[in-house]
Length: 572
Image (cartoon, rainbow, N blue to C red; front, side):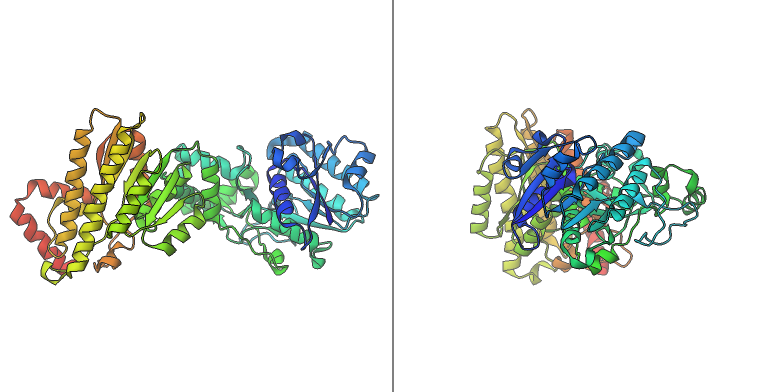
């Protein structure tokens, strides 16, 4: 059994590493895990019971006690550090001294290898670096913070110790359990709060890596023969701009972010004076913290967590939580976007769709989501839908499942039209009614969201059944909202215009060249904002929808139908 010593075991990365080694062992062997930390009592009980614990402050503990804790022939994963970039001189002294003390003790312990967790901050950029290429392991270190200087001194101590070693320099590490004052967590909180600065698409690129992949990098560096004496950057291999990070966080949380272009002239001007700016400002316009993970990849490292999946996980674990929601049509388009945004807000989401592979892909990103494969055009599918609604308290339901069929009424197959009416009308009406009856029994009430369409405002020759079904959704939902006006139940009717989903292709609708369709995430974000307002309403999404609603009010009915008939024949 391999003895594995983890210092800083109560920290963000340390706890994840404890769990990984306990679960998987090291190098194909089971492991006896030793946790060294100043306050091991803060570890979850399940971890405390599973490992050998030593309550030590490495910077102050007697060398003999560190020797006892490390034992003989151990793999030592050294993470203990004050990880705050703003810790200043005190953090520098603590980090350097704790590393020096540990190395002194390890000279008596014959470790198989010492893996030192450094940081990209140990390198940063020299004043004359134009930041046009990623940092790699040959870059001349020029740390821009006292924290980075401490990490660089730690690297030097480890390399000069004469002990077998490897050094891993993680880039921006993120994931559940990260500190509230750390980069991506701060960005997430700012996006959720709607801070104006998060609207700007800053061009400066950074490298990030999920905490699970940092653990993999540390273990690979600790066990691979070729890693002896080497230094590696750990990154997911996909640099991302600050503006893109804001935008991605906005997409998954239902906020408008990263969509205002940062003028290129401003960015170029800021780059010229980069060396005189604080590091946090430098990163906005320059690729200061972008690194290459090529050397670690050559060792066999492959990131396992995509950035999108990791950001969704982070958002969910920092959300306040919510009740049970059901979303139909959840495997794609608007339904999928709403499911993700409800998931990241902490809700327990039940995702219904007939597309089993689509649901499987959704649950890879949102693993706490409960997927239910159901075809709502069938009696069995709607019966399953009923059982899902009845399965416990219900905060809300989003009836987003819908299909369209292109063609004149006489040309549309009977089964296709029947299926459309079953999904768009019967399933929605039955689901709304059943959810309503359950919500009436709840003190908290609930929210019913029915997705109609801009097609609800006028007949559409060439898509007669589809437009009629959406007119039903609009009329049915608005009438229900009025019936419930004095209750705690809200009914929100969403009428989106052209949205960039698979609907057009699936329905046989031509896409007009140059046509700009709304992202599904925007429709979802506006829908969630309507839910948060806590009142019934009809939400018209997009200028096209508002224009179509206005036309339906001011034009004679016969003229309106004729106009849309011509448009559908010529454009759709």
